[in-house]
Length: 183
Image 1 (tube, helix red, strand yellow):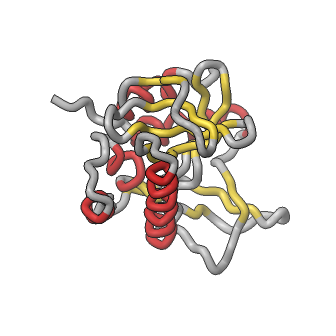
Image 2 (cartoon, rainbow, N blue to C red):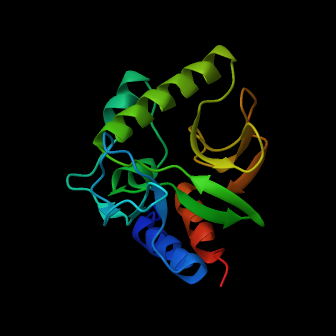
């Protein structure tokens, strides 16, 4: 049986973290031409808009992309990106801050699929195992990625193989992120 990916709990932990640390919902730069159902209120004087994750209906999937790339994505990838519209999530693992990428709106979900396609094609040209990037670290060119064949979440430098495993699955990774929010 596959362990569920608890994105609702991760989104709540992220929102709670922001409420504790900045006394507000997370915010991002406002772009009138790039609306999202998760926007809350009006932009502030810095042209930032607060946001809160919103459940998608219907949920997004990468099934067609997997078929086009002749691969099968690991369990949990659809849930990670397809269950909510959201801004990127600030999270912590192994004492390091990461930014977990999310889809802001339906067009962003489509753009994400294009970026995943480009990343996988690059990995194939380099004759490296297929990975899907899911986040960024504070270090230049260091990505959080999922190994397509094993489902392990780890770190890789752009153009290099995954070199450090953070979790054995997306579900385990999300659980670690939830558990690692500072109090």
